[in-house]
Length: 335
Image (tube, rainbow, N blue to C red; front, side, top):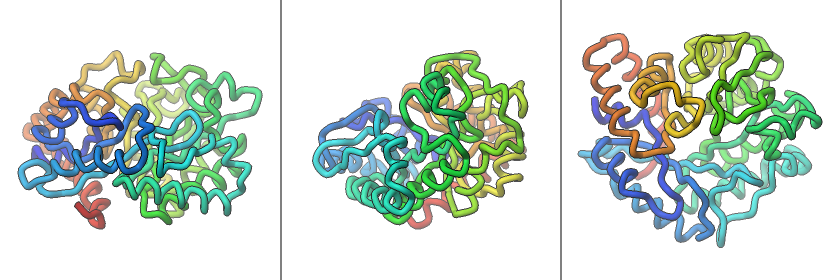
């Protein structure tokens, strides 16, 4: 059980070298997934060394010899963790859009090969949120302010964002489409603000189309927003909402892959909940894998999930189902 629960967490590892708390999360708490965080200009060879220091922790007693998913945020523009020799300087999504879908897919394939050469097998990109207009973009704290959008209609976002995703797939890197059900209408950013709410998006919103198209073309990962959606489930933020995860993403979209949270450890939006409750609420509502930017929070979260699974058969069934999804996704990975 401890190892199954460990497969349901993705913990931050500094791209320049992991901290002791990250090593402890993998070594003692069986965490099975990491993402390189911060910024590194050291290049592909040095990054591969950092990744090896993490993957070397895979042993029978840590992850049951199951290999790690190693992710990073390599979107482009303001959001590019890895740079230096061996990594292209990737333009922001608004500039990528000018390439057109065919050229963008080809370029993303090259960016994916660079990641894979450094041992990174998951890219926490592309953003397929639809920002409502060029005029609103500067006020849209999480997306438009940083030119992370591929356009201002669901059609253009779908065509271009999914071209990026397909390029990553071509390279053997799993893309993560984000942030379901969309952050293109909010003003504050959930990373630095509480009570971030979308007051417009509905369960049948046209702006869901890029996510549905990604699922239809085989996307294996979808990252959630951490906002509230007043016209969908006003009582629960997205990562605590069975309506958003089970009804909309699993049911309406037919998604069978990994439902990944955004950071639930350090984001201001999560301030009202204890560390343990953040994990219990997420997995209880149907989440598959939880992102944690603060490795020091892993022990409390891991222990809470293990304890609840041992005491509650219905919760244990959810943990086992989530672990099965992760293990199936890892079936082609090499150590």
